[in-house]
Length: 162
Image 1 (cartoon, one colour):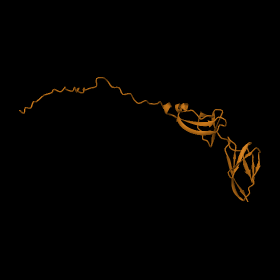
Image 2 (cartoon, rainbow, N blue to C red):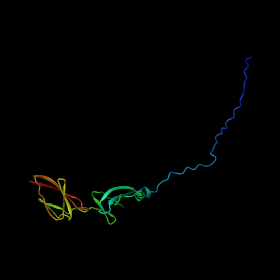
Image 3 (tube, rainbow, N blue to C red):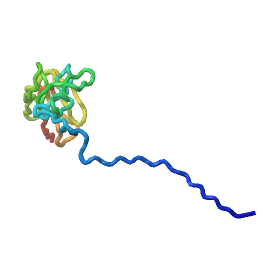
Image 4 (cartoon, helix red, strand yellow):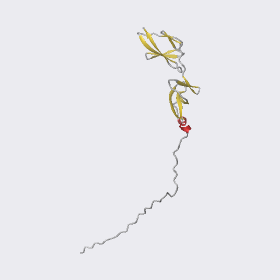
């Protein structure tokens, strides 16, 4: 037995590695980012309001095209314009400033009440359809009385009963 080692050579295929070209084979055009127009970027005030009353429920400021994409909740609509729940309402397609409340306090009487209105004191609301209301409390003290008649602003009074 002879120890003969045979060498076998196997030729491996050569991998093709292309050389990088000195310059790209064609011109590469990189587009600029899409730039909105100044009009698209401009912020627009809007309000969402109850159709039945004109009471504003939400407000904001976004580009006009975003307003066009919005769907308001049922029974509500969107109006372009500046407004806030506490100080504005919508009527006849316009955002308007809520008018001052006509109610006045004279001693223990509320006068010039809007008709109808709601008089709230000590957390209890009372409907009122008169133009005056006499106030009376079961205990002495100072009490807050609020007169509400939307779209008028609320009128708040401090009433002291001795």
